[in-house]
Image 1 (cartoon, one colour):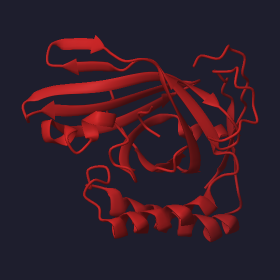
Image 2 (spheres, helix red, strand yellow):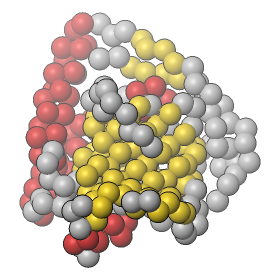
Image 3 (tube, one colour):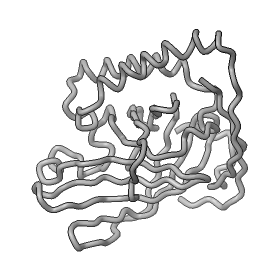
Length: 235
């Protein structure tokens, strides 16, 4: 495993719930961008043998509990608790400043949320799921500060659609980020339009590696993101 580091700088004015995902800020809230400069420092093989193996086992265990659960919808209360226990154990292996780790960038599947209706809002509610069958929930994080969320679905099982959000990432401290999103864009069949207003979320990054990223929202919801390898999110 390698510890990650990158340099952040901020200089843009402040823009103004939620799609995917508060804590007092130790950085200026009048900033929305940061420049990336990354490097990874090697650790000794002895330290890897001590710390990486338990983390790898925990990652495998966590994924086995959340994959193919419709983002957590099909899990029982006890199973949600088991997911939370494994996630809490993984927190111990998180790098010191996860917001500075370049592993944050990339395309991620949203494979779990402890509040399953949180990703996607009304489209993922109990009523919404009667009409909208979720196909994908994806988050793309691009340097230096771009975030794109997309929920793809089918309406009544035959008409494809998606709702997407584009936002700017802002670092609040060594673990917390804020994303301010533009109004959502809805596409269903040939229709394409925007609705609503701006929204914002705050997310604490509690673990990150080459495979997964864990986040906790300002209201306590746990999110599990699994890195996509190959392919395109088209968001």
